[in-house]
Image (cartoon, rainbow, N blue to C red):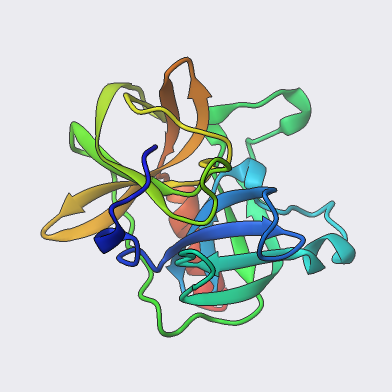
Length: 208
């Protein structure tokens, strides 16, 4: 994905890097704030029950990172992967969606809302290893085909783009409709938003 124009680089404070071992590491994915202390990303980017406390100490979510500046930074206390995502059986992009839990709410960055996809062109915003200091994006990423769980999009992805939000503009506001999972030849595979995400967020924001 190309680097966003300079004028647009700070327009996406809810989108950030999920880093391991500090701010500058290249071992990263992309995630998006969808509640004050919850980040949406790919399942293979989310910590899970087998992760140790030492591993979690090295993880950070850095929101709105632009050349060393950022909107917010938080530690990671844990995460959850879709229960059907079983990496021991090989990567399955159909269920490659997960959540990251932050150690404190981010109250001054509005989370992005969720929606089911309905368009034929989407925006994709994220970070990747070739230009990790700046957000990159494609604002006209065409839908090639879709099924019940996956979308194939006509835009290339690079390592680090995993977990990037697929965005659709609805009633004048950007909504997350899917999450990037993997590269497929010169296209991208993204897992559609599903009830599981909303149920997990509701459970953790309502105290259930």
